[in-house]
Length: 435
Image (cartoon, rainbow, N blue to C red; front, side, top):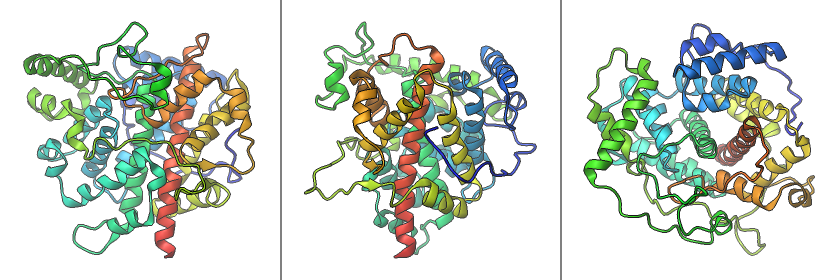
């Protein structure tokens, strides 16, 4: 398999008497022990049944074709957002909002806004970054860099957040924030890649699913600017559409509000515009500099890897999260594929290469041999700039693929991006600690 580790299966702290981030009934369907083929099929049937009744969020519905991976994903997400940790629950969901907003992911911004209010978050914070405590505002720079150009992540970013003062972060808090940011950034790629996100006021679309006047190849290579959308609807019409979308989302997550009655207008206003949670909106992905004269150095996995460095650091500073993340990486690469392990490895290494990470023991000629041009364009757009409001998403070129195989491709992209962001952030933290 692509991802190997000598650690083997570690004993994780059981999530006893804790509901998953989706409905409790889903947790009862998914066993946290290794599943055989029959249990996996039963798990899949259960998830599909719950999904048909609106009992599973849209992301879980998409992942339901790979129930063993879904278990691993939900364990990690539940641990980050709901289990014991240095950050209060309101901070966790607000950081998730900040991360999703970098890619204008309305689905995740809306979902975590609902969670934020449900755990007692101050509704005023949802007016924008200017309304939150300075320590959350200070996290914006790291959020921006990790989301779009993670190779810029430096010790100075960590030092600025950990400096002494009333608004400083502790090292444990910052590590949990970093994991949250990376988790949500990569989840945005999956949301857009799988078509989960729904924009209440979408760009005009051509028959092939892209805005008029776009060239798929140019767009995927970042060589053209995005054309301006047609005249937007009136404010009244826009707010009305947003209201409908928010009512639908509230119905899907009704148990979040069982004892909390909020005016619909509150959710409508706070959920409508992800841009209020970001600064410097023009900052985005750029081609990683590969020329020797450029000051960006290639990140060599032989010098700092997840297995030898990142795992132990994150697990020491944020107990057990290393095991959960490790299981995610292991699960996604263990999924069966009709295209073989070489193509999965090529996909993983191609994503890391675009983000400045290289493997000295890998022949990168295999990337061009195994990945068709159209597939590379798709992978690049989902991994590097999934924001559908700025750049159209290239269609996945493998028409004969089963839906589960298409989801598998998007899961690989998500997990490779997640690991890349974690490597850059954890290396910067290591550099700060040893300085």
